[in-house]
Amino acid sequence: MKISPKSFDKIEDEILYLKKEKNAVILAHYYQHEEIQDIADFIGDSLDLSKKAQQTDADIIVFCGVRFMAEVAKILSPQKTVILPDINAGCSLEESCPPNLFKAFKKKYPDHIVLSYINCSAEIKALSDVIVTSSNAAKIINTFPKNKKIIFAPDRHLGNYLNKITGRNMILWNGACIVHETFSEKELIKLKVRNENAKIIAHPECPENILNYADFIGSTSALLKFTSDDDTQKFIVATEPHIIHQMKKNQPTKEFLVAPGNDGSCSCSNCPYMELNTLEKLRNCLLEVTPKINIDNKLILKAKKPLIEMLKLS
Ligand code: SF4
Image (cartoon, rainbow, N blue to C red; front, side):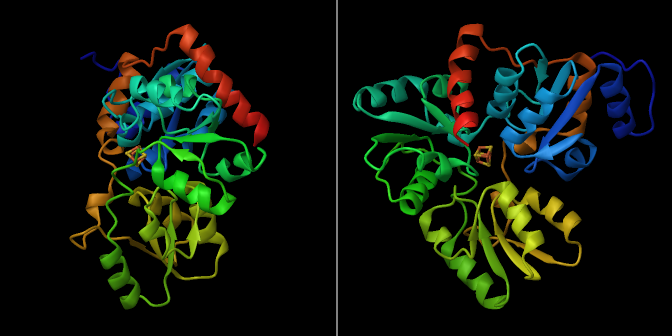
């Protein structure tokens, strides 16, 4: 490993020095460790972060999140170098939709258009007509006539929720996120009984049996906003628990409880992929400008098309 040109007492100071020296911008997803969120230039959800990075004059984008998110940053800013603290930071939802199987699946429905949730690989994006996020999916679906035949990939829970709220019958790819599938209905009910006045807020990647109890369902940004706007003093949060760091920062007097898993504890709902990124790895990737996200130019062009389509429709 290369040695930093200067010595620092704190790793945070070294990261800030390297960031300036390399003209880099640091992005952190809401699901990152607290100390990474605290050092980032921008904190947000995946699309919002990539759009913000696109608008900066930084030469390097450090994406503290998972690989598909860094790929979106590269697709939107192909001239910039995009690095990820840990290249193994994948995503169970992305992995649940292998491109070769999806290609064969798509062939069975030649008269359908493909809407894909942004949590998928660049290859799946390239096989899609429009990309959606959990914030804009319903709005985009509603721009199509009711009889439009649609395949939705890769998250079956989000797809099921969208079918319900838009009155559609989209064909769903059978993918899921391991984090949002770990919440236990039985334990959630127990927690709610002990905290009668708390409101349950949930991400639509959760299965229906969890969403049925939610007072509010929304994207990470929408959940964060709701906890600020709503007068409730206590919330039970059914999404990756690192988001609570920003909720507490915005509303220090309010209480936030993590929706429990089967054993009644909360740590099982931490995203194991997001947790791979650490301050040390962030420092190392800035110092060595690696690991880089490299995507073939042809694939960038194909994957960019449905992303642009989304920006037009949302
Ligand atoms: S929380 Fe789920 S969807 Fe998000 S990165 Fe982790 S595994 Fe993927």
